[in-house]
Length: 425
Image (cartoon, rainbow, N blue to C red; front, side, top):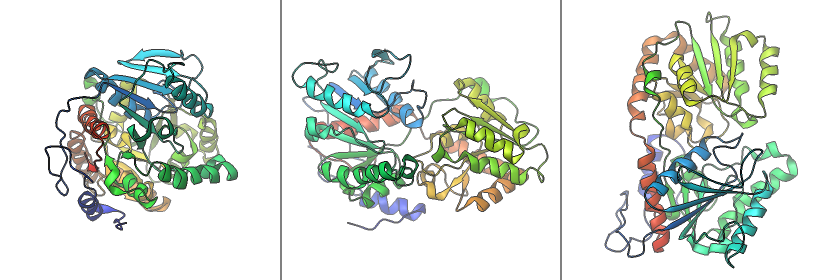
């Protein structure tokens, strides 16, 4: 196994050079560091089955679910039958069609894996909710734990991993955390040792490589971007300093660090305000933390809002703060970038070292004190803030869901053809 540089431009260059196709498709010669283009096959992909524990309608749905829905919708638009098997939640029908994707629901946060497994087995004999699904390729989205679709569909399965969960498993408790990490770090890589992997960033690809996944089977398909409503892009910035956090409210997002940063700077920066956009089961803990810090009047918890409201809040902001413990990519980084709002986050989060170009489109910190220092500097240095924001906005134009869907289709066609691809697609 080749040792991979952990961070920075050198790491990206080395990783692109190392991750090359293990076998070239018919009619093409694989080249180092080059994107592989597949010929049109005599038997094109007709059906894809997606397995994920949540969908975008789920109360706890976030960026990873958006990624799946946007790409799935564009695959369906191109003529592929796309079915998503996921968990059911209060008020959600067992079956519906959204953006061309057939959504089949069953089970809860944990039992979704059991019910999906039964559905896959029953489908093989023409029974159950997936009986009409005959997938050419199955995408097993591993959010810590895989659906083990490999047992039913063999090498037709591609494993999609947004990021590894080493830092998050402890939140589940000592026993569950150890068991979960054992499955993610040992069992899954061994079980899927012949399957294609897909992830969303170079840092996540490096994490998979560290778990023993062959780099020749890891393809990187980055996130796309929903265009911000036009009317939100022309509104004026707030005349007073505002910081925004776009995030689900769960422990590993570490919103407490944003609250503490505002508390630390409030006496130095007049009228400083924090907008927290997003909801989640950790909300009341955060509200209480803000009260204990004495900054309740300087924080607005907006909860779940529509896209127009979200982008309007971002447009008025000076800086976007993303203090998450772990990110696969950080979709919110590019969303904020559309508004020329730079991001501050942690280098150790992994994915932000890919979505944020440190010192160019935002800044990365190694600890909380440094994060507070970066925030203070950006809030008090308009020239630097505007420079980073302008470069962030320019970079945001590089991303689109159409591009991401085309890349994903290329990976799925490779799986269907019995080949493997690697590198940034």
